[in-house]
Amino acid sequence: MSGTVVIGGGPAGAAAAILLARAGARVTVVEREAAAREKVCGEFLGPDAAALMASLGLPLPSLGAVPVSRGALAAGSRDAAWALPFAAWSLPRAVMDEALLDAAARAGATVLRGRGAAGAAREGEGWSVRLAGGARLAARSVVLATGKHELRGHARSATRGQIGLKLPLRLAGPMEGTVLLLPFAGGYAGLQPRGGEGAGREANLCAALRAVGSEARDPAALLGRVASGSALAARLLRDAEPLLARPLAVGGVPYGFRHRDGAGAPCGLYRAGDQFAVVPSLAGDGVAMALAGGMAAARAILEGVPSAAFHRALDAELGRPMRWAGAIARLLEAAPGALTLAAGVFPAGARLAAARTRLPSRPRPVAGGREGGAGPVRILARR
Ligand SMILES: Cc1cc2nc3c(=O)[nH]c(=O)nc-3n(C[C@H](O)[C@H](O)[C@H](O)COP(=O)(O)OP(=O)(O)OC[C@H]3O[C@@H](n4cnc5c(N)ncnc54)[C@H](O)[C@@H]3O)c2cc1C
View: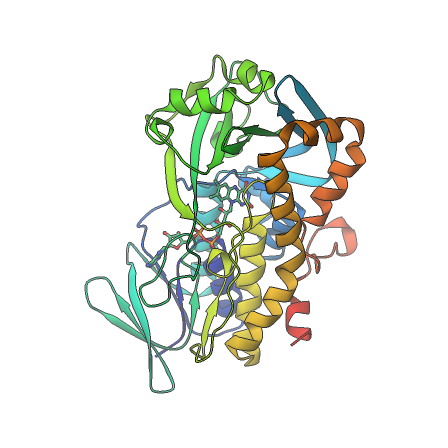
């Protein structure tokens, strides 16, 4: 019997596996993708994600991340820019997720690639995880970290969802360390320079939309929809060269979802990442929340904290960033012009709002200026 089976090898699952394996626990990660691949994500990584990656021994600059130091917002003929109140980064998800899974394997976790889990059920005192194809893994506990995808029998309770689209681009000019928020009718997009192999030449366009038509298939339609929102977007995207034949898409993203255990919730199944809470994209730090949740789940398992107590503590921790990111996303959609005007007149307000989307128990800088420490420890102290 494996001590823990982690279902899903994204940031939440891989971070949980790294800590469990480093503590000497037996852990198996089941990841349905056989190899690294692009994921629908804006790839904006704030200081919490950077500090958590560093504390796992994976500092973002060493993976090829590029710095992002300014924020900007454009709506109609207006635009505003401000210095971010923290250091931020951009790194392709294929690079980051692969580095995390590799670190989990090096720490001693068994990583099963190209194997999807088809279900997980209580069996005796533990769990039986059924793999696609029929094999079963027995475990004392399970970390459910399948991200945007539901596991049969454990689907999230959210009913409505938005659509996420991602399109890497080659722009005519450099973007110079800026993350741009570009609202348009029915959604908003983020545009920022790409890290990794595309650094210096490529940008990442990622959009959250309430409904899509041809934008999901046709790069030109997506570029046109984003460009319709502001003069700045139209100018920047005019000569953009899409680097994919069609945008990557994910549907049914339940922004604002927060897991609550109902009566009779199964004991020993620890939810982390998007399976626990889904923060509105580009307004909040989904990857940081996933890393923090996965690491906290590992600590809860190692310390024998029941899954229900862990879920309550994680919910308390994520409440503030979820509320602030939700408010920013609503304003981006409902009043982009007023928000752009306000950010132009009062850039300190934009900086404050960005800072409030951070995790409350943030990772602390340690001696020598190196970032590290583990913010999510407080989650367990509160139980
Ligand atoms: C449009 C959009 C833009 C975003 N932009 C940003 C951003 O700029 N910055 C940011 O921090 N966050 C952003 N996010 C949020 C971020 O992508 C997620 O919060 C984060 O990826 C959650 O990590 P996770 O580990 O929970 O899930 P995921 O990253 O989705 O990983 C889940 C993993 O589980 C695997 N899996 C799924 N089902 C199974 C199964 N049955 N068996 C085995 N494996 C399985 C998948 O292959 C995947 O590798 C964005 C999200 C969207 C939709």
